[in-house]
Image (cartoon, rainbow over all chains, first blue to last red; front, side, top):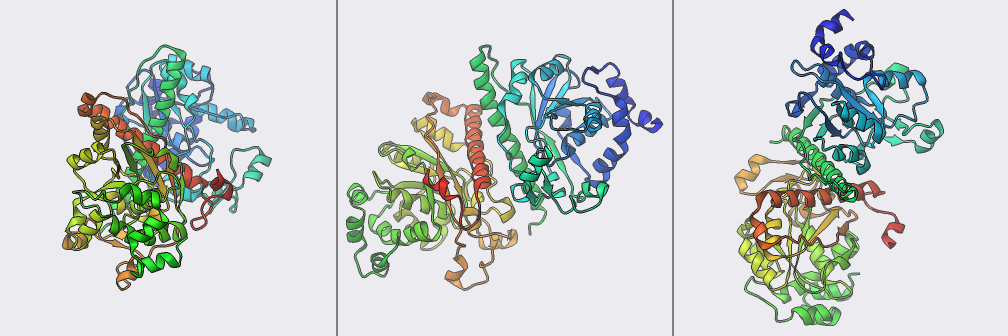
Length: 271
Length: 297
């Protein structure tokens, strides 16, 4: 804990007056900050660019791609923003968490900054001037041959952001689908266990408990794109129209950036 | 189905034009005597059409969805994702549209200059309907109410390596400018299948510079096998999804609004990529493709 307070001094100062309505607790992050740091710095060796684009204060929305049952991409985003020297920020991740039956796991996620998705919750966070992240594909395990191909975004998730004229930053990340390749999704078993997906990976569920959650040491790249401009509208129907086109456009922006990143990664093997 | 008649035409036993007039009278009636200064020759097209039809119907078993979205009269701009090391996707689309049940039409694809430097290839490309890619040529063709096909990824799009398959490169926005300037509707087309017929392991940069080629691919057959065999494609099942025409509805002056043009080009690129993602997710297997239920729709 002592090390945590010294390493993340700026961050702790920043979150002192933060809104704890949804159960955010610094102790949660303190518990796993070593693990997150190891994964971020050493295991996945994440290269994060474009963080300067985020505003130092005031509300903003980040929309990103992710995959896998465990929310590693959001956690890496939380860690990246937490460990910045200048302007560290707290980020609240809005996600569908109703399926999580285990009370302790649910509580722990709340402590880390996860918030159950609802339009009212998102509005509250934006009003508080918080940084909000949405991952429309959260908890869906993508098959290996579908890797880095986005599912269609649910446009209703962006509605509160556009209603309140908040800047939306797309976040593209690659690496996670190679680190944890999913060969098969057992939908029947997932339904039976009441979880969103039941992936079969090289580690899961074969190995004994903590080891089956590991991954390959694949390098990750994450990149925050410039904020999207959209028209400000007042009418309800007009706003919905803007959100629909905006959601498609953001999805396309992220996919195009992912394509560029993959191309850059492959370029190293050209002769 | 390619049959004995087609073989006869290919081997020169039957006059290709005569066979086309018999087999596809509406196309023949429409384009006979329509040879223009861009070098279109119906006889060359008629000669090669059976071969491409064989690829289309029997080899790749292309399934063309939404072909009715291509208008039977008037100008249109077809825009798609490029694929296959040899740009077979254009040929497939031309052949498919020429064999459409009602109102078959020809497509004039804009082709990059490099093809005209290959001996023997330039004339053939022009005679089968392709045109050197310049803005003037495209405008002329659209003024004549033709269908112009553009692959805005350019030649780079054809040389995608296998891990990059169906990852659309950033579109060159010229086609939007053209569409606004000539008030032409844009029809996006997503093609799945083309990127897997020649799995491209790597592009040899040094070789391509040496031989003045846009790229020099290494595939399972190229350059190992002797000449025609090196171009032997895999029998992958294709699907082409033709979207509804997009009427941009901007006045002609807006053609020079760079920001607007970029934005629309991006939107169309993202639309095609989104459709590719969806089609790939629905695909059951590389060689048998999509469910029969989907095909009946």
